Length: 424
Image: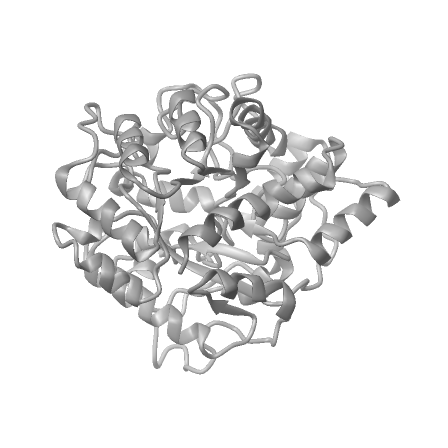
């Protein structure tokens, strides 16, 4: 069964109707550039079949009234929209191609798709966790450096997205009708025991870095470790250096004890760029109330994730959709206050679950989802890709009668407040 057929069958089963196929015009400037079009496929790199326009599929039609549409249009036009985690990465159409595809430098990036999203700023890690150019297991120094270099090269050939280094760079996105990419890393595992590598990464444009991924590293324990030893001595050196340089610290994949240690050790606010609330869905991938509260008390922001099989809800564990994801948003608003809530959907283009399956063992993805029983779906209804995810989250807030200024905080204002104080 093709990816498109899977999408159509699942949407019909979960929503009772066929997917919406209305064409979506780019909301941002798009100059027509396709990833690596300056090279010759087959000569300079091995091409793989990619999903077609179905990768922009709208899986849920959230209808707005005329008055609500005006509010939505106003938000898109005047208020900065920040995704604390999303990707331009395109997954190959054939799941068997995923691993060999990720073993080469030239993985495709979807500039048109990002332009359709209307997002102004994206925390983008360029899928560094699945880069296998030199390593069998990813998250290695050479892989990350090569991935950054090749992506920067491709970005230099187009005019839809640009690399942001400072707070002022972020503000230019709305003004120029382009998208600012804030280079990030999923985890600091690539540092090994070399603290000066933090400076090197900053010099290469990295402005946000996770402390750990799901497994432990030299800095601390990931969220799948049965015994969380907390932030290590080396980890404290890294936190200090990141504070000194002006780099955002992310604890999305850290264990609970390590998360609390990082929050305490950091002089600057700490971000949880893409996670959710364990009070809504009891899995290691979600954060317990104490971590969420401590993060907020330090001035941090929590971005709500929408990756498949993550931000589910105990109220309906067999239907991962927009409603379950936004339940995490409302839980966080009640728990820590609206000034500390953001959005980090963590979507990309193509079959997210197929990619999860291929990298499950290497990245401990299944372990991160915990032992809760749920039915695995091929995508999250209404949040399948960047072209619909952020828009539907904003529309949902409008439908729930949130005030415009409160929506502005959630969709970007809170994140920018922190970034203004950290980025230099």
